[in-house]
Length: 328
Ligand code: UFG
Image (cartoon, rainbow, N blue to C red; front, side, top):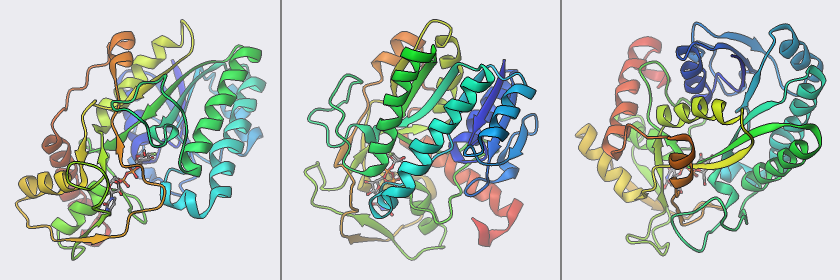
């Protein structure tokens, strides 16, 4: 298949691109490199530096390369930033997404895989969360992704779009060649590892009075390569119709448990400091992944938190050799 990955130079996008290329698909990436890194794009994939807002560019890219499927990963994806700048999230996640879909219509491409998020659920009443549970986002990030899921539903109805929406829980870890390298970094595991390696003095624990077992937030961490493999399975699903799936391991770890696991993996002390809760953060997000396991036979291969953290730690050591200690 010929596949276009939007945001394919980003953390998750680069791993999805890698999986597509390794699976033998002709893979193209469009990324404006505002957050991504061109060196993370797999060598067998072709990178176009550009923005999906540019409808003419995207239409030409789709037509010239006879694209069969678009995997849409270009997005703004930070809960706290979305609380401060909702306009950015509606622009990048809803308006730009619609321009992308319209370019696809123009070029006659009707298959689509969408990176959605657990943030569409808000503060769920029960755990693990099923796809049919209430959708009540508590932040503009989740709202913008949910709004786009609704756009997909109506494009399916009126324009014969076939789509799979994957609601990611917390992607984590690294592959041999790709890992997490945000600037600024806001995610827990890379920040914990920055503390382990001495780049930061301590890791902030954002709130320790949540109603959880140890007072800190609980998340479902899924290894980025298992998450990426689900996209390959979703390609087949597109042949039969549209669907929405959670993507998580169906287990949860608190912030304190993540830090404790990182101490075991790295052998470092990792000092902590308790800080106020981050606005918009739900207390607990754990996926039910029954549906994707049942319907797409998705089977995660890396299931221990230590293994996930170890992969990120090893990648960080390798990066120090590639780009120098100050960059990672
Ligand atoms: N956290 C800290 N200290 C830090 C960073 C994070 O305590 O320095 C906490 C957060 O408050 C949260 C947990 O660690 O409870 C995980 O935070 P991350 O920033 O790593 O991830 P999020 O859960 O905020 O976000 C992730 C994805 C989003 C997705 C969301 C679902 O990045 O795209 O999960 O809520 F929407």
